[in-house]
Length: 119
Image (cartoon, rainbow, N blue to C red):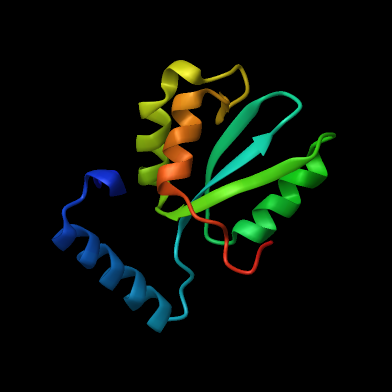
């Protein structure tokens, strides 16, 4: 299992970036971990997708509440699982949804960026 991005050395980050560039050369979309906020319930979904915009459209159609994308970071399903494990004490009864605790929000603010092309 790969290390979380915030624990990678500079050389490991460069290697990960090279891997993502190779995928792009083959027209393969990179993987992203996304953080989706449901402000009414004060919960955050930690998910993974290669097509974040489409995944968000599907989740929004399924939800009766407004969902807000807090940000994304490069990462595959293993990175997502590492983050989920790190914040497992915040897990709610709904799979992949976590209490919007200050430690999780600080992690997102430090590691995630807005999705390119999103306002």
